[in-house]
Amino acid sequence: MKPISGKASLSVLLGAAFLMATSSIGPGFMLQTAAFTNDLKADFAFAIIVSVIFSIIAQLNVWTIIGISKMRGQDIANKVLPGLGYFVAFLISLGGLAFNIGNIGGASMGLNIVFGIDTTTAAAISGILGILLFASPKMGGVLDNTAKILGTVMLVLIGYVAFSTNPPVAEAVTHAVAPTHYPWLATITLIGGTVGGYITFSGGHRLIDAGITGQEHLKDVRRAAFMGMSVDAVVRILLFLAVLGVVSMGYALDPKDPAGSAFLLGAGEIGHKLFGIVFFCAALTSVVGAAYTSVSFLKTLFKVVERNEKLTIMTFIFVSTCILIFIGKPASLLILAGSVNGLILPITLAVMLFATHKSEIVGDYKHNKLLYYTGWIVVLVTAYIGVTSLQGIAKLLG
Image (tube, rainbow, N blue to C red; front, top):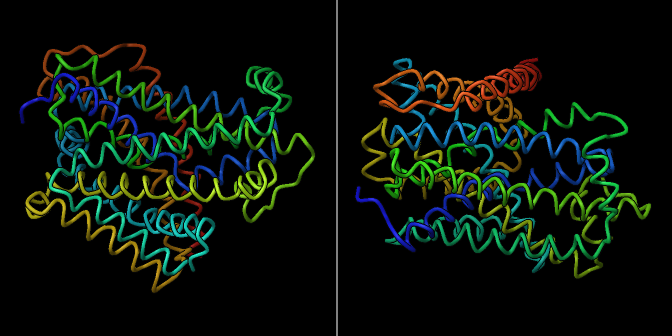
């Protein structure tokens, strides 16, 4: 594929960055951030900073090796250990399908809040919208623009609410460095949610489709990675500050809907409508990211998927929507998917680090030592998260 250049190249880089960031910023992201802020107050700033650092290390390692090798994650895995790519693709696809069910549910909740549409009808509308985005002949451009536009809407609206609640920024900065109590459990959970599953690979795989790969494009690849991580970090920080402003005023958030109640208490009924818009945008972009990336892990392994990529993606979204509408919230499946998701990053990041020693994958490229060794620290920490997450499977079997 001929590499894209000029303004088109910048557009693709931004698209890949926003695809990764908005894939990370789903309904779970918002609920998790609000709940932890409600419990930990300003101390949660420490968890955010540590998780951002871990995210930078993981993302730069993965994006760099994907870019240099011009291979997708599953193909690199098969080069490192024959057959491993199929296992990784299975984990990614299973997790992506299950989380997409939750994302469709989140999008329907957003439409329900804004327009009062019943959740079943709203779920069908959300699924149709997701499918239509991939029906365009110029799928790549639509994917990039959707991620950029909806991502920007989220940034602006969350920023507005953050400023409306007048959060104690100085206190948050102080606790980011020296928390009263170190929130290790929240930090570990946050790391798993920020860089787990398909999220780490979404942007890198988009750049492969656009032909922005090889050592000559390494700066572009890393620039896109930094842009994506910056968007993700800014949204999380703004959401944290918005919720912190509310809880600092002494309000108690609704434990069933911490994020929604924070917007309602912080900015009134308008704030709650804005939350509905943000929640819908977060969910729909995650639907797009999960479907695209999950299928991208299958298309080089199965020729039938490669020949019918768009149809496979649309079917992926259709099945997710039908499961939500006809079965409801499959709690057991979501627990299983969350547990499986926790295993993905340590396996895939370890594969990437091993790949740096294989000339048939990276050629004569010499990987940055600091990235390499800190990458192994992330592998160990996320492996611990993964083992802990297996308790979800134990609960199912028990």
